[in-house]
Image (cartoon, rainbow, N blue to C red; front, side):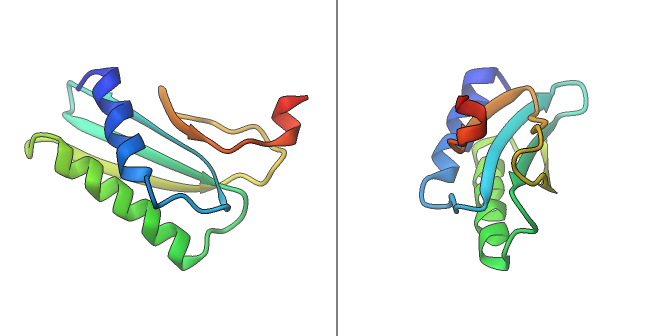
Amino acid sequence: MDRAAQLLSLQRALLGNVHAELRQASIEADDGKRLVRVRFEYDASPSKVCQECCSIAASEVAADIDESWQVSEEHVEIPCPQDLSPLANLAYARWEASRAA
């Protein structure tokens, strides 16, 4: 799965599923393992609704790829202003004053 396909898939899946708690979302594919990883990083422990919306987005990514691939989703709490740790392809980043400075 190429970089552009990964980004377009996750960005489309995030439409309507982004909450204020979400700091960023990223994606990467391991062709050898036929695995797509999606990471959602939150400012605090995500609310149930926010985490469900991000899980829906991960499911939509899974629907975009060949069924022989697996999708792994990670939900990580990284309070602002701590540095984030995106996967290879950053699909969404919340604007934060600490990053703009």
